[in-house]
Image 1 (tube, rainbow, N blue to C red):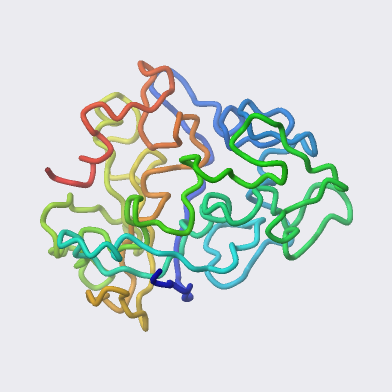
Image 2 (spheres, rainbow, N blue to C red):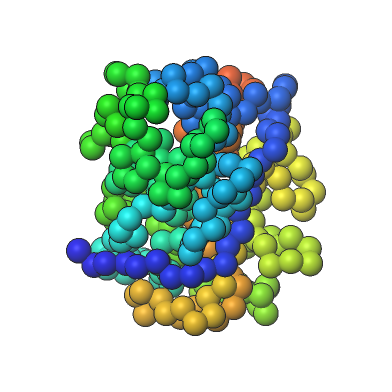
Length: 304
């Protein structure tokens, strides 16, 4: 296995404060599988707390270690930080520069690489529950009341079971590429107009005045959801800014050496959205559920 070690990166992450769909507002994370507390609606629940946000965020004592690019992150990064990435397949169609896994993707993998319990929480609810390690790979202990419902995709310790699709593992070669340049590179702080190295991608838009890029969600706009002007909203496909100065691509393709847009897990998924698989696409007609009919998500970026 080709080993990939984390390097320091600069990234931006987006937290959706409120999500609206045609015909009404989504209730947000409370009604999703990411509500792991006692009042949750999914199968991954613990009676140890009724809180929701604590499984990812904390107002005090958050992890500020290398690579943490998510606001007030309440989990320890997976250890070891070693991943095999899509470029290892050697496919001739992969023409982007590959960075080490980082940004918001690294935060997602603190649960979804299956190497540690999902209740690895640095600052757990209650007095005297701070632990800088989050309890280690096993997370919080039964002595603290952290036990998990049976029948879900986690074991007794709260670690995702092997074989379930949500356990991506540390070998990411069979998943959509992440921590990669958008469009094969070419867009950067000093070259916001491109051209991109790969013409088979839709040109991203830039937030006025800052190095932050996104791809408009035309499908949602056509269905009456999301801004029809050039304004970044929760339904748009986020591109995460990483500063590539001093970084060396792991497959020999050049970085810009400055801020440029990257594809990460959060480009297509928002962990707060009340959609079936947290994808940034849904309409009231779909009952709040994601449908990739016509491959609308894929074709938002890929011009095929």
